[in-house]
Amino acid sequence: MKTMLIAAAILTLALSSIAQDRKTIYVDRMEGLEPFIEKALQAVELPFDFIEEDKQPDMKANLARMHSAYGEILYKHKLGRDETHRLELRDVTTNKVIAWHTFRLSGDDDSRRRAAEEFASKVKKAWGKRSR
Image (tube, rainbow, N blue to C red; front, top):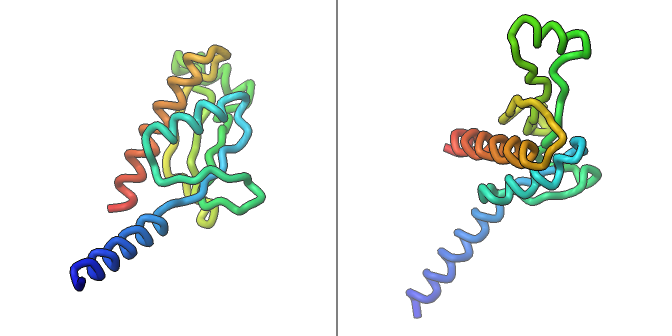
């Protein structure tokens, strides 16, 4: 009987610690990338619950332009590439960027899926370092 009570207590503690480690995340509008980002983050099995922005999430994923139009021309001319967008995962309370992925945004679904998967893998790697 004691072992059943001890096992139940351990299970309760384990479940409560797992529930506390989950974070809420809001995926901002990103020119059609939102479903790809959500799917990729779910695929890497991070402890995130996706919610709306008005429910005050712990984390926020968004898309940022890195350069102005003139800056993009200079960037392309000087460096020979045009990586003009950056996916970021920010901690809302500290406004600190946890992970980011720089890429060239194009209109096809394959490149969007690839960018989302690469972003999700970087988030997983950063999250693993953070939770050590």
